[in-house]
Length: 77
Image (cartoon, rainbow, N blue to C red; front, side, top):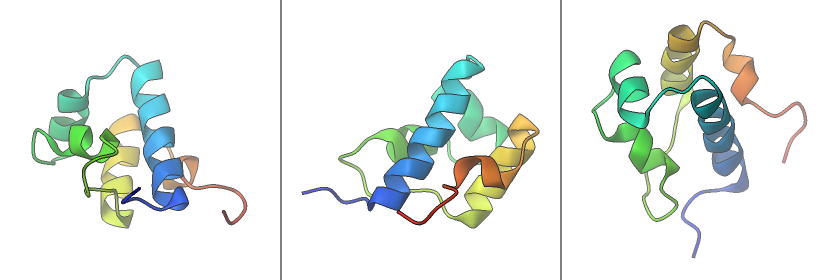
């Protein structure tokens, strides 16, 4: 059973794509965005319930110097 919705998974994958493209580790993103050290890893783990909310995405966008919209789909899923 998948705990996360298709929208949650889309957002998590977009964050992961940017993180890996910029060669940023899970812990570096967690610390840089002001989260618990394990938070990003937990979000990326499909067996965990953790997922990003708008405040998380705003902090991640600040960390990467991008727009929060970079993590949101253009059309509804």
